[in-house]
Amino acid sequence: MPQAFDLVVIGAGPGGYVAAIRAAQLGFKTACIDNFKNAAGKPSLGGTCLNVGCIPSKALLESSENYERVQHKFAAHGITVKDASIDVPTMIARKQKIVDQFTGGIAGLFRKNKVTSLHGTGAFKAAAAEGYTIEVTTDGKAEEIQAKHVIVATGSVPRALPMAPFDNELILDNAGALSLKQTPKRLGVIGAGVIGLEMGSVWRRLGAEVTVLEALPGFLQAADEAVAKEALKIFTKELGLAIRTGVTVQSIEKGKKSVTVAYAVDGKDERAEFDRLIVAVGRVPNTQGLNADAVGLKLDARGFIEVDGDCRTSLANVYAIGDVVRGPMLAHKAMEEAVAVAERLAGQAPHVNLDNVPWVIYTSPEIAWVGRTEQSLRDAGVKYRAGQFPFLANGRARALGEPAGFVKMLADADTDRILGVHIIGPFASELISEAVVAMEFGASSEDIARIVHAHPSLSEAMHEAALAVDKRTLHI
Ligand code: FAD
Ligand code: NAD
Picture: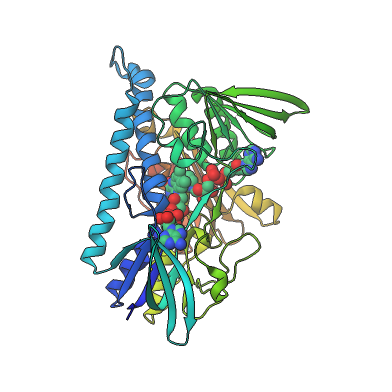
């Protein structure tokens, strides 16, 4: 008899592992299937986020930022460091140690919560009134398990350009970009999105000449226009990234040790030769290997699993969450959907508000936002008031030596309800939480303006931005 579970989760990224843990806490007999193997060929839980995404990228950003500080920022404090150098293999080993600790931690959490962890590829085999037969294939060997409910959390994979398949030697995806053994002299990046900017920053700070080629005419168009403008200025003038927008990549040719990209920009044909090329042009939902057709699991036109607002798929008792469904491809979005689905299975009535999902880009300075951008409000004809406060006038930011950037708040002109908050500056990733809480509680800019904020703290910039909405800042 195949093993039978109340719930089988396919995928153990932040969506899948969190769903499995929460369901087990709620009393479901739960199994979680995952097929990720790390560079050492070992099964490693945690999906893209823990293995080749959020966590390793932040580890490298921190290492490279430290190197930048030693070289360029310590002198102002009177600290002299002679002959600073970076040992890339040590930096990569530190990153891998952090990854291994966290991925091993998930295995521990599964044991603690009595989640059955199965390594292999999970595929739908058959559907019947009592549930689904799921086939788990590991190294060519298949076994079957039974599931009353299924949560699909198979995530996403990098989109390759047809002319430049990834080899992770010269043409790198996210995994390759996070594992370089030495700093390339000339690094090309196709796509000025989140990965392009984060990875471009890492290798630029370590000494690479970095050229970023972006197809869209504008820079960082998903962000608020004022933030994008400030970011472009800092990334090009201070960090030294060469960012070209409005680029049409025409061909990518691999040589023995380099890659040549031919592209058109501003009506001219150009060519550039790189020692390594990162292609970061977005990610696509990963439904390969699921055998979705066998049971009639519906995908939309872009290949995402079709779901309703509660993550229900076209099949009874089958849910899908995270990167494999609509909405932002962010770990925290996947985790919240995971908890909500597990609780819904247990008869509770949870809710995830996709309108208030914060975005963070971990460049230096960091960029974070929640809610509507100024351009989207203007385009929609919404009447709003905007308040902005620069970190230059914030004591804590000056003491940190991080005076670049600002907080910008947008509030409804009639009701004063906060519609969006945009930050570029130090610890924007942490500061944005206040805005998320405020917006979830339907706060007005005046609510923030009347809350006591610690002094001196970066959060005072949020306070002042709220005061600025009503044109009554105190410190500029
Ligand atoms: P995934 O994490 O992709 O996990 C899916 C898992 O399912 C994988 O382990 C996969 O191998 C497995 N799988 C797939 N198919 C099957 C199958 N048929 N059977 C068994 N297993 C299967 N997001 C943030 O919020 N913050 C960040 O700072 C951030 N940084 C990032 C940096 C990089 C370089 C990248 C690439 C992404 C980053 N992201 C970040 C995005 C984040 O990683 C994803 O949004 C998140 O991992 C999605 O979680 P998920 O559970 O949906 O899927
Ligand atoms: P992205 O969507 O952020 O950026 C891709 C960029 O590539 C876009 O600007 C797009 O216009 C450009 N592009 C597309 N085709 C192109 C082409 N042919 N030539 C030149 N440019 C082209 O995607 P990404 O950077 O690959 O990251 C994927 C996703 O992973 C992100 O959207 C995000 O959801 C997630 N992620 C999040 C974080 C974070 O939260 N800090 C970090 C990394 C990744």
